[in-house]
Length: 553
Image 1 (cartoon, one colour):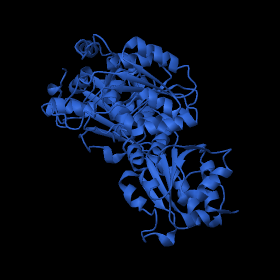
Image 2 (cartoon, rainbow, N blue to C red):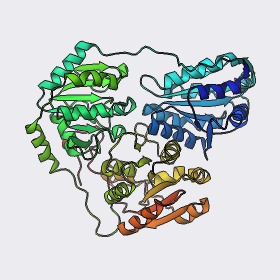
Image 3 (cartoon, rainbow, N blue to C red):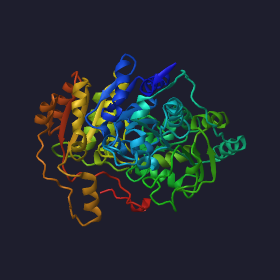
């Protein structure tokens, strides 16, 4: 059948099972929005306050579900406003298809109104991107975009659709099957060697990254940990893979990770790294990282092998597939001496100090976690509150803690919360932020209000850009340059202006009362928590430093 490009666009989205799209309209995408209007019964469009919020919402939708998120923006500033959201998805390997409009092909290159070379801009931060030159190319390109975004190491793909391509016509035939790409599988002799080294180890240690979540391998990781009594530490992207209560769960690793988790990596004789890239926030000193261990790396992306830290054995392929082959070869055993040593280290782990009055960040996180329950989804922005949330929330499941790990985008959290709540309407969604980050994304409150999304936002207000100020306090002789903004935002009044409910809390009982009330609301709520600006995220290993340089006070 012959259809317009805009109609083909909508039909392909439905082919691929897309039921939700986040975006913001503009002149170059009016034909695409007309098609969405005509198919509103099949594809729900969520209008955000800003295109960056739409990109983060598509990201949050993808992280919460494992499905590919979709975002749509017009040409020029609409397209460029997606860039931070695309980069955040790229750094954290989140499947996303970003669709932008552009001026007609005969106007490209002529500095036309709202023309921008978005494929050139996004080339370093996408797995692939396209400019569709002819309407006949649109369907196969869109299908390929979804295939690339969701295969191998997942990530964002951008498709730029000029206006005349959307207006033009072409033959269309429905096709549900996506293009197939060759999957790389680890050799059996490598699997056997990995099992041999793990079985021989007396001090084995798991180092778990976001790839374990992306490949849906969390259950296999847990089984491996329990079967071989292998303790594990996790990066912020793997939060929830090991449940809070598991005796093998040593906590987060790296710069702000638990001392015990870092010590276990330093002293292990066999390190099994699953879906992680040995980033500088974990392997702060690559020359000393797990230097006593036989290092095994499992990763779907061959370019990550030996990139940051040299390993002794690499298993390249999907983590779920590799672990399913590895697990039957792992012996059931215990490591009592190793676990006793770990328990001794845990007795000396950092314990945050209590506030004689007021709110301590760790108590805020513990209370929020307890009242929200184990099925709640948490999103964060970036900074001190992000680390406190990673450290002290009682994480029990993967895909329940959504945060910008690699890029560290301060405006990520509210958009991600919207995407998560749209994706999982029956789950509580808690957005944890701070006064610094929240000023970058509070405009998305209008989206939550418009769609009646009961997202609870916890604002840790220390009247400072806390994480940067912490670095200035420790490393720059307390020269607080531009980190103590003199802002006088009344969050309760602003909340009321947006059409939602706001609370201000200065004590734990006040927070408990506010949170219990918020959990009963049918719309969004803000809860401001006043905290001391001298509160720091500890422990802390300086950038490029070693475990011996860990700061604990």
